[in-house]
Length: 384
Ligand code: ATP
Ligand code: MG
Image (tube, rainbow, N blue to C red; front, side, top):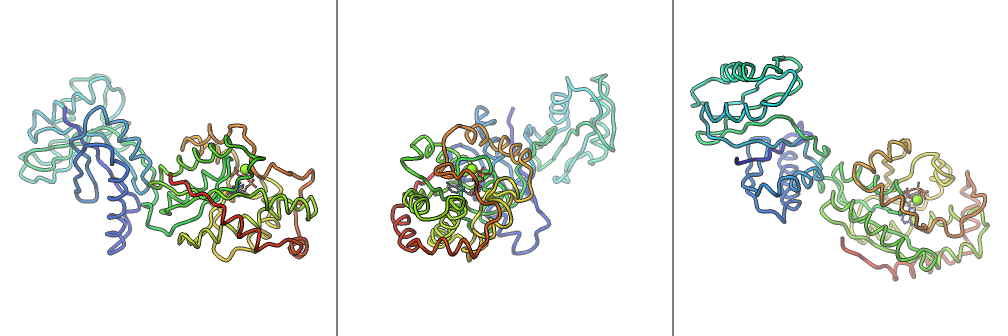
């Protein structure tokens, strides 16, 4: 039987010009996500249809579409001729082995169809009831709906059930952000959250070769690639961070190691962000999770930034972050046991509430500008 995938958009309260712009972006993003498949793209009022695809690709297409932000729900429908018998057959097929309460919902865009919507729903509902004794009708809150969408003289869509999409806004509808990605659980989730709100992303990672090895870098590449599935690809900037860490380790008080590192990371992230027209930095920080995530610590790193630093996970519990990381399939990679640059030279007692004046004083012994410049010159860009 011929099938079609129905795509419904989210945030449809958007009006006027904005809406056109968003729809255009969503359309481009859908086409990019499905670039490796053969199919026909059809635009109908407020929705899109994917038609004429090979049945073997159905599940792969669905899983790609579930990663396109701005899609609210999806349904897989049977496409039948617009005549009563064929529509009824499709409805019977869907309900033959089902149990519980249902209702039939008809939309009749093709007004020449000889039976009116309500009448058709009632008629087909009656037949379905008589064919399957495990079904009862509940028009208010049914377990499932059998939906009939009579589009034109030739084709009608029949489907049961909806698949939840990613929701949010189409990627590209908000500015670009620079995601600071570590090998941990949080930062990939933070990137996903901002992509969901329409941000295009670049990513930056600080690597402490040879203290952190190739496996640690590969892990970050894999994580970035997974986040990139939600943004239509991503450029990863890998920054050599060892020299900076060694300089801090040698010249600054041990308990300030992480505080100092964070300020360098932030400064470099901002410069790289500006060089690729990213208007914000994104981190996976969550309040109170570790010593460097107190408001005092955040203030210390934030104060060297001049562009907004977005922290979508700031008020999340770890357990909720883990749930999202499992959903977006980054968790298993994130928990692989490779060192992170922040575990190199880790102080025994990191300062929990650093005072900004102290931080600035301790930092003043370093040749900040030179260190930053050399790190930036050593950046490797990986297109994922
Ligand atoms: P994550 O789970 O994302 O690693 P975390 O709970 O380990 O976060 P921290 O180590 O304090 O927390 O890092 C806070 C944030 O700083 C990270 O979420 C990430 O955005 C950024 N960050 C940390 N290490 C790096 C790194 N090596 N490269 C780029 N960004 C980093
Ligand atoms: Mg970490």
